[in-house]
Amino acid sequence: MKTLYEILGVPKNASSIVIKEAFKKLAMEHHPDKGGDADEFILVQQAYEILSDIKSRKEYDLTGHIPNMNEEAMIISKAKNNLIQALRGMISSQQFLRNSDSFDIISTMSTCIVDNKNGIQNILKDKNKQLKLIEKVLKKLIKKTKTESSFLHDSLNSMILDTQNEIKSINLDIKVLDIMSELIKEYSYDTNMDIYTMFNTMNRNQNTATSPIFSLNSWTTS
Image (tube, rainbow, N blue to C red):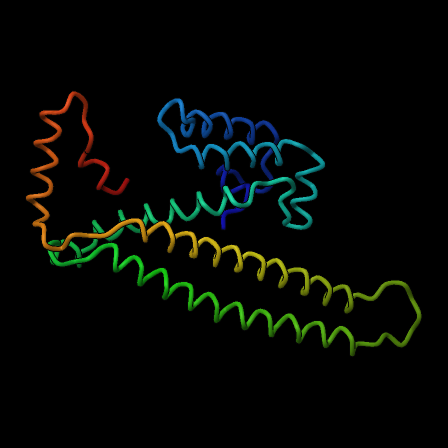
């Protein structure tokens, strides 16, 4: 999952002016009234609201927690963007170009989603084991002198926090894959239709329609 800084396309040490300029540019690009992606627009808007507020930004930088962020909107937007990128990547791949009539894009994407989820779940298991191990070490670590600070304990607590954030991020990735799986179920791919016949049919529909309903440009990678 992207960080708020990645959503706006700015570095973590970006000034408030840079953040505001990035927001204005992306808001114009993704605004629904201008034909942009509504979900992406929501993400950009929410990222700016948090990073433009000193208190919220400090909390986010320290904890990685996104205050008052619509997590569901982020997950759905990420799932849609992943599917779009996967579709574009497959269409431009050599495997598709060699077998354009028999290559089932939807089935392939579904298989990739399952494989990715299985791989991420294995990583999640390892991270949970790592977390339990660090917590166990923390309990066993005893400081013999009675001083308030302990750099070893502080280091372990930091490791625990980092691992917890990693686990949270992995769980979000799994949620994204689950949404991708649900979205892809709404589609099928007709391998019996010749790809060039499909393009010609769509082009004929374009010529007879009052406005274009399909563009070959949408099938190319940017």
